[in-house]
Image (cartoon, rainbow, N blue to C red):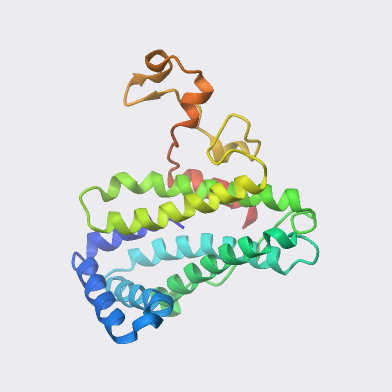
Length: 247
């Protein structure tokens, strides 16, 4: 979900959104106690987003773009978790939890959009996606790694904003999802030259120069080791191109 872009647009039209979020969050935690940990966050965020959304129709497009991507991920894990004899018992709890996260994201965005929320599309998958576990894992890896790079693609737009902290907290959890799926596939937890998922997911990950510094020359390490030490961003157009075949 491209929350960096969502937060950027909301901050641009409603500079008080972050302060209201902090206020409502504190009030909810005091009033709800332990329940706040499970139910207040989506409700509070939706309330703040609704107030900001009411000020301009441009936010509607941003939220619906994010919602469509979340529909895809939520649909994918719902179908995967429901498929008979697909996910081994040892891995079931992992994908059940990831699926809950995606469902929560959909609920948050639909709550913010209200009647303006786009309907859930009908998604397309290959014939073996939900019958062959290796295929299911491969696509899960592609979705998760794409999401991590999408967050990074918007980080520069949030520099100097308080909301960057919140966005990075979400980003770090998405990165843990990606690492866990990679572990299940017997891969390293970070992007490497051995990744065979769709090429578009890892486009641009072969850089060996960072901040104009040639790190191969500087460190004496191999190009592969240098590439593995850094993730590169994906812009919105690239993310859409990756998701388009499933819509």
